[in-house]
Image (cartoon, rainbow over all chains, first blue to last red; front, side, top):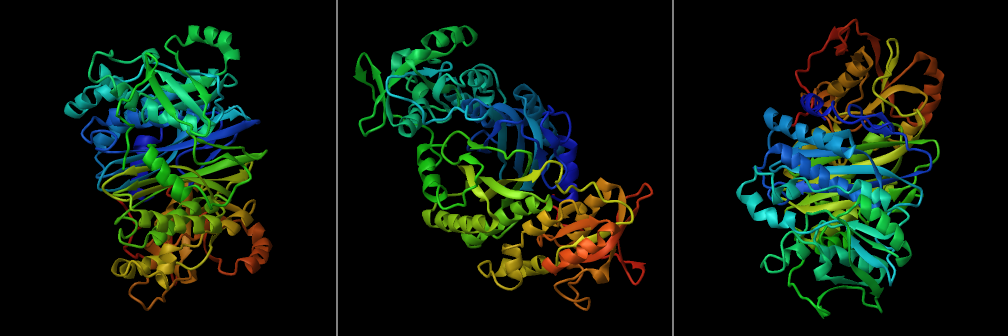
Length: 314
Length: 314
């Protein structure tokens, strides 16, 4: 990193972030140093958001930062990890001080909410704003929630209602500065850290829904070799069935709800847990795949074809 | 990540990388899982390269991958870390199978050379090729080589000659497919992992030169609060003083040599070490900063002003 850049980064990104007790050295050397807790495993993910692909380039920088960090952090929640910190790779078309200040303000605010220390970063120039965030956290040995543990006969649960973020999109594109109503779900997706932690030892599989319920449920189905049956009427949605946009709630991504499987032996545990997480609800079950793991959405006992698939970049 | 993307990544990036004994789960879930060795600290850095900023967009994909990974890995060497793995964030203008295959081939080849497992990634679409690589490795508790430990009276050493990568640039821009001669230093910078490991407990400070000797020496000077005196004639350069391009060897980046300080008590150790690392050589010393830490390049006892500074993005 050049001297000028270093100064720029230092000014906007060095201070004011939450401090992780495991951090030995953060921003400012060739690399950061973190001391892992004894008996912990490191959980890590990298997530990229590109201007006018993942958010409107003209959206306020604070909102862009919020969304980028929250979407990245959601992967930690989905693994049942305790957040620790992140590295930021920021590619900018220019280095406007005001924009950077706003971006850093949003980043700091949500880093505090998510308990993630900024450990290091790299700032580069490019034609287009590109934000890559590498997040990390800890799980006790062997307790991470993975995608491959669902068993036939288990229930499938969802952490909360779906659809608001996808429904917000036309509004977000028209008025990128508005961050209330549905748009709040788009810019500030809930990161279910507490639920993820509570599900360790309880859920047999888990992921966060970034590309739509149907597509992401398919990841659990294939990784676990089960067929997933989802009762469309059990899925809580941001709009009701009479609305023509209802299918979007199943195919649209960006809500970052957790989808997880739980065995019937956990029924009483789930009942207790529901007092702390009242939005979570059972939406279906896993069945034997018989060689063809897939996702079947049904209503009134009939398969429902919404003719929509999740968000694909290519 | 969408289904299509997932398939694309899976095809090109899932297999054939070196396997780290610490990896519990790599590519394919919401996040990777790594089990830290007992008594080890995690060393991490993120590094971005942008097409036509850090490399020619038309360069062969294998060379682009090689350079991106090697430059990122150099930060681990500079910290004295044992390489473990990396996460890749790849933003592409399109998803051409042939390009991706070549990129993955280069990435795999150099990941093996550098002993870095691909742990996870994200692929997105953007106007321009942007590659962010988050690398990580281990050091025994408290043994990382930092920038802030140089003391007045210590010697300053360099791992090898400077200038070839910067001198290659005109040629690289003209013929991006050529990777021999000076261009080999540009595309395949030496990553001094073994030297970094050997310097633990010996060097009092260390960094890798990515933005030019003078600028990066300034980082040690300020972090350690010393003034660094460099004898220009002791610095081994890719061309000799008579060449008008000689100043480039001091200001040009991209060689990724290690620059480190060593106390005089380590003289005999360094003499022994030099048998294993014959290219390293002493180029100057650290002096008391007296409130003004800086870098002074001198020749024949006179300060030398090359009127060049390091690479600045902004």
